[in-house]
Image (tube, rainbow, N blue to C red; front, side):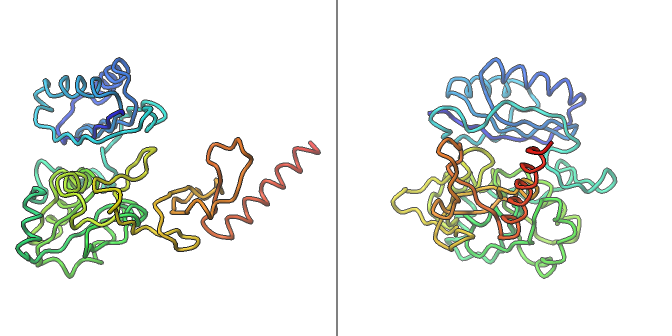
Length: 313
């Protein structure tokens, strides 16, 4: 089985293009596939490879003083190394897209929430500490897994956070813990809360994946959404695993994600295998689904029109 490594680091990178090229060459040499983003503010990457290749990558990165204290998240990948279709490392303005603009951007090295270790969160639960978890992930991610009592500011995209802060204004004087997949979004999200006047702000160190790994099956219900071929992951006993996701079509428990087959929509949603529309046997997905009946009709009419015009062209 292959391994997947996830990490980020907010650190000033003078030449993101050069760092991008170095990252790409290193990953290519080690046979890693996945996604990397490099910006002046830092680096954010998820790669899959053999245990040996991942180990060499982490050793090489840790030898660089800028990345010596990186918090590595390591999980089981796919059996054949196909979690990602290719290797992509890109230069971007931000390593997570909060889109506050240059004048209002958050630098986590200057302002961010207090880091709370997973063991300390577990202690909060055990001791009945009064706190409020605010999930900074996108809406479709929460459908398959979340902490009990999660408060969600209704984010279709992370960049919606600033305009949606009014939805959690009642928490300004409460103890707030922000959570996200691996921790990178919470660095800026918790910093934004601090800057906007929230008095007692924490962020889950290492993200939800770190908590699930240390305390499988506790407090976080369901599975963690991940941005690769696996779609979801969990660490608890498969036989005791609780599925909280529901098929958007029929409502049965499911963690099976699809994209709307109308390519002009491509919305991401849960659809169980039984609700997929059948395709020819050689179709790689085994079936398609539409997020609603309008998308179904619009796409099929588009295909009819396209085939008609092609026939008489």
